[in-house]
Image (cartoon, rainbow, N blue to C red; front, side):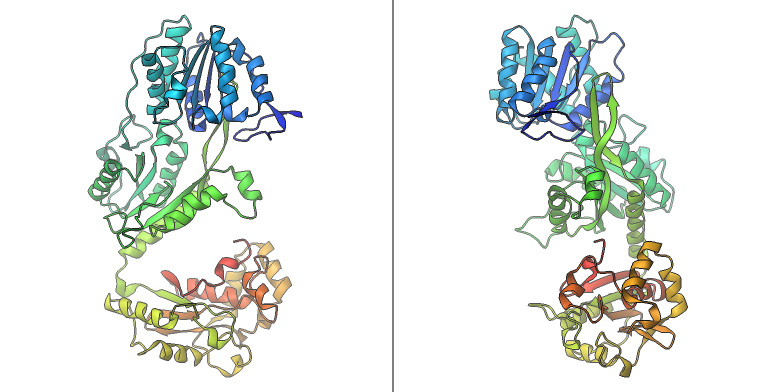
Length: 561
């Protein structure tokens, strides 16, 4: 068994001894939630110099018996007062609680409270102080916020550490609140006074627990990034969107502010399986899921999977049930700073400005799309095509993709989108597509091409890619003029236009290689013809929106995804 120093936000394996590296103190506060520890560390910065010595720690970092014994011997047995806030009850730290009871028998004041809002008599009744005193400390922690944390410190020092600080009872924090970085209690009018006329309002929903933990720095940064995109932000802290009272208040603010888009950082889904057709919010605006990753950034960067299982479930799989638009992580949980006073590492959500910029721009684009008259919108519908035989264009198990695409086009036509006369059937749509260039290399030279991209235009777009990417494409597929989609100085684009609306055939991932590698190999870089297709859709055609119709295409298998 080895003695190992703990790492911020990490845990030592069970077959080793965890050493928190702390020295004794009069007051020790143990919290199994990092957000509570971050709040207490922040509040400790404002304590007077003569405040009793203080240590903060997460009991989950000292799990096995040897680790607990070491921490008891080095720190806990020297304390006068120990407060522990524990999630999950005694069973999650049973041996640690047993050792605390031994210290209580020797005269140490030991106070045990739940780590959430649910009473836990089995845990709390072990406390050595009266119930009213114990529950007061519990409420200081549960209500959260910087002022409640300071009052907790003052109360504990005055009650059990021979100090005479003034303090007040815990102040409740609203379940739903408009947040402003420069105001302790904000109203909608406070933001409205700062907003710029004609700019869209975007609601930024985040968990109330961030407000409770004074962990709002990443929200402040996100608001700045939104403002840089010409957006008026409206940050709203919410305990849970599943609480009827919270949800009603949020909806009222969304309507009053005439919100044009919602950025949601809360997890899970709102929709009910019993009523999947109902829109979660009554306001008919896009909802983008901005991800607050629970992992740290180095682990995310090193992982081939990317986000961990918790984040994939909470922030991608379940929110998709609501029809939310999934974006990307805008913050990671990581070491923020070292609290020397409490000898603890503060772990909280840290902003990722470049990824915030991406999401802010995405929000602006969705708003611009909604504001654009339907008659001016350019929409591209892309049909999957693999294997790359003509008979597999738009195929899908249990789905008539051509007929579905035609239904979409007719619905768009009824809403005033720019469409020319449409084919009568899905079969006729496919026949018209087969009248031009497809991915079939055997007949590609005999078919006309209805749209293309000049080689110099393609190279200009290609050269915007990082050098590493360009080198990989050229090394695997050669130069653009050797690509099968190259003809007479231009890169051919498979598809047809009906008015201003484009129906495209998704290009092949590669040529003359093992089909399974073409479709599902994440290390296979796309050929020039593939890049030219999407460059044309974005730059030449100028699509406002791209819709991949039918079964999943091959875009998600590209290198780096």
